[in-house]
Length: 282
Picture 1: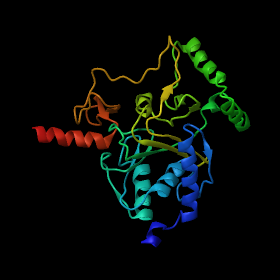
Picture 2 (picture 1 turned 30 degrees about the vertical axis):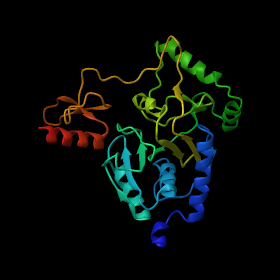
Picture 3 (picture 1 turned 30 degrees about the horizontal axis):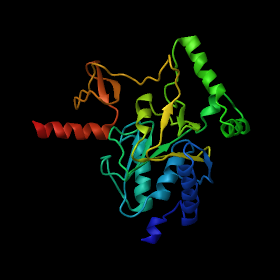
Picture 4 (picture 1 turned 135 degrees about the horizontal axis):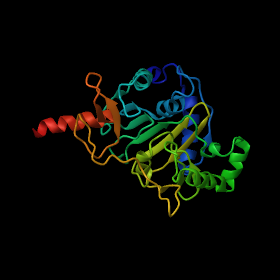
């Protein structure tokens, strides 16, 4: 069993180093902790940071769920899920309620996290100040001094030019009243789920070799002006054509036969559960 648990890519020493970095990230919410990113059989930028976190934390008794842009059956999600199963002998599930570890890219499940759950996000670019400062040395200084004036200026320039803040995904947010962090390329709709959440959110960037975290019951505030408040994507009057849900994040799709524009839950696992519940009600 021990040999199966350490199969192939991450030995116990590597896992311990990643867990130590993770503990530091949890202790300092929003702070980017450097770590020795390992080589994995997927390309950097395709989820190696999240995968290393998952493989380092997973253990006997866990169940893992892997999604990509809300989908359980995309190529990226299926490949990572298969690798995690082979490396840990842990069962996978599509039901977010049953999973103890959820690894995701670009979406947060509709089902709110519980205290016994961990959500691991794959992050391509962890540094939120990269929009306004190209040098790593300078971004570290700005974080250390809590000098975020250039980020506020970036938001103000958006308003002057376009009449609104145009940043969609990667929306800069303040964690625990101290660090501005990048919540990964999740939509604005998902960002509010991080505030005072019960579960633990971990962010892994393998290519950039950074880990950061939002612990349970932590304040997360999107940057906003008093007269230009933060807004999320809206779907008033729309519902999923499969499950009928009108309170979830919806993807716009087109019927290949009729050409009709339809809307469908981005979270396929949640949509499947809703469809099953509707059948039971009928």
